[in-house]
Structure formats: C-alpha cells, structure tokens
Image (tube, rainbow, N blue to C red; front, side, top):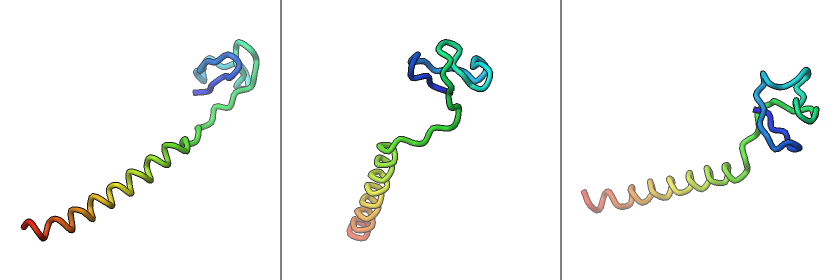
Length: 66
C-alpha cells in the first residue's frame, strides 16, 4: 500500500491517479514493497541466539537427568 507523507494517509492502488500519484496532493507515490525494518532483523538475530542457547542448555541437561 502506498503511503503519502504529505497527507499522512495510505492509498489503495485502485484509488491512485494516473502514474501512481496521490489523488489529494498530486505527489508521486512509490507502490513498491517496503524493506523489513532494521529492528525486526535485530529481533530475529536475538531470537536465533536465544534458541541456540536453549538447545545447548537442553543438550547439557538431558544426559544428567535421563
């Protein structure tokens, strides 16, 4: 969904004017796919690190309790 900074509004592709312009202010909008935010990538790396730690903990704990 394209976002217009000037109008602070999302627009559908069908509601955009000719050439992908905002119907209210006439600014050209990019309707491409946005990239993933950097903090989401940091969250994924932290989650992967946590899962590696938990698997290591399980491998250490399991032989002592089986």
